[in-house]
Image (cartoon, rainbow, N blue to C red; front, side, top):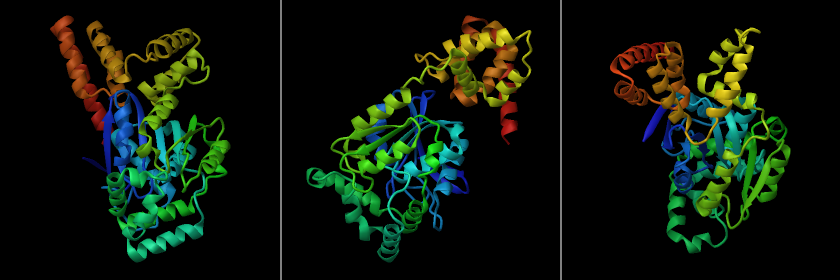
Length: 390
């Protein structure tokens, strides 16, 4: 189990999947924890690097006094991303998780590569309905509403077909801390992004369960209609939690959306995006500012030819491509470029251990002096990175 202190609380999370792959964040529904995604993750972990999160007041994350707000829960998420070193990712948000995802996409667009809004909307329910639920939970605990709420999570007949599964998911719901559940209800009650979603720039897929009662398909479709360019997909035979009833269909929709090619970007634009993702905005901004007419053709060449072509190929992950690049630069004695790409490991997912292994191969195939020299550069660069992070 993994925990970090972020935004003033202890947050439980789990990292899974292929390190260096495209990054996916999964945000859970009200009264659930990160276990609801397990069957979806099992179908995606060979291709993606995945972050599962228990939001404040749920699962094993810390519960603080309410009420909560969607901006607060979004700050928890971005603080967690900072803590684990993720600059950006595609975000999949279910129900209240979708509201959190919407907020981040609107207010921190650079953090969201692609967006999947599942069984959610820009506005969910009415203030009166949420106030009634908050009052019921505070009076009798989450167990007092467990049967009624859990039965609305699934399509008709699910309980009879899968009684053990239903009992387990109901137990998960009823284990949610009373304060965390009630405080999160208040966050949903107070959230209204019906106007603001028009500003979402990330490519967006909205998914609805055909038999969803809390957020019916037309409500989800209506939110998609407010987001420029958003697509809508219906999952048949699923209620409010399609990840539990139809994990295969959900995983396929997510993968297709995240891996979809952007519409006709130029080689230069594509290369610049990859260059920034790997080397960081600060480095690229310095290089761009220092460009003169003398080296402008060269800068365009490396942006298009290296970053927009080789680094944009999908066969290697960025982690794998980073390791190969470090070994080649070390073998060729390219000291300045080697240091630059060591610094880039914080963005590519390559670890210190990966660099060690790459330089051991340099020692075998390019010679001990070359490896020894590269090791000194890497040690110095990693030390500088640690000092800068303090």
